[in-house]
Length: 474
Image (cartoon, rainbow, N blue to C red):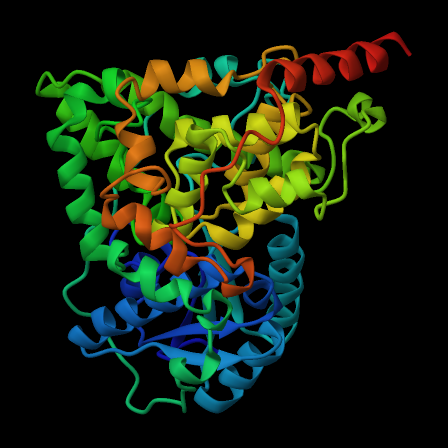
């Protein structure tokens, strides 16, 4: 099929933006009409309730953005290969462009799509855009993938990264548009049940909101090193959900932070390390895809994790009723806002995997259901890092003491009181909102007494260490 001036189908996935978008830039440079498309396929349908709901909000916002340029987002559902081939037949499009994904399911799908389209004579091109560095472009001196973060950080630190492509003010559109399905018919928010109403005020979807949040963060960048672990003070970027859906590109963040560094802002080095941690997670997932499903270190296969997600203590963890305030506060923040502070994520994960010796996959899967900023690589690496089974992991004997963590990062219990209503005479709305966000079948009320700990912290730590020593001796 000759391309000529035939349209390019721009297959959007987790890249819902116009700026810092190499695939879009290439399509614009071709001078051909551009047909933006999003496909509801099995990869999307497999998302948990919160990320699927957040995706729906992102698609709604992105559709409005495209309409402001005189374009539109075509929505179709079905097998990606079949949908794209049908659109090619309907529109006479001569090319399909998309931004690469790196999880094994997406790689398998995209490889199949590219082969089928190419065989059909359609130009099929994938582009970078979700990461700063393609996973195969970063390697040790021996040409091997990195297994440890610090050497990777040293390898990429200071490496030139192209500046982000500017946001287009217009691009060519087709003379006629194919039929689009209605986003409202997809029911992407059904799994949230009543929780969506509670979380919604905390969500500001879309590229413009992402850029505004970046500006807000840059204003406080100087305090990042000091505050990023504090639960009681603002200090984190709050960019994770935007990065997850690609409502902002990593090159945009990098170059803006580097510009701030040239102006003398403190905290840039510490932040850039964290940005590269995201790269490290994708690097690992690409080279060792079993990171998503099994212990990265096979010697952990013999550890006697609890794998029963319905045990009372695991249910107490899931319901944020463990009796350990900082653990419960972290989980309740997630139920009310869709997000959780990174320090709280580590505390919550350590408590489940070590004090309750419960398999990290139970926690990972629960986060995948509840986090609006869910990211396959970061979620898997984070849980395995805390559990001790992953690359560059926290040693198993390094067990977070939740109370010590609370004293250090929430010394006046502002974070705890913000999210836990029980025991307070006049609890804040954020704490009360938890009871309206959770499933009714949990039958919990702010009038309930706060529970006693489901496990004594010292006893839980000692039990975990005994199991670990027993496995080590085998």
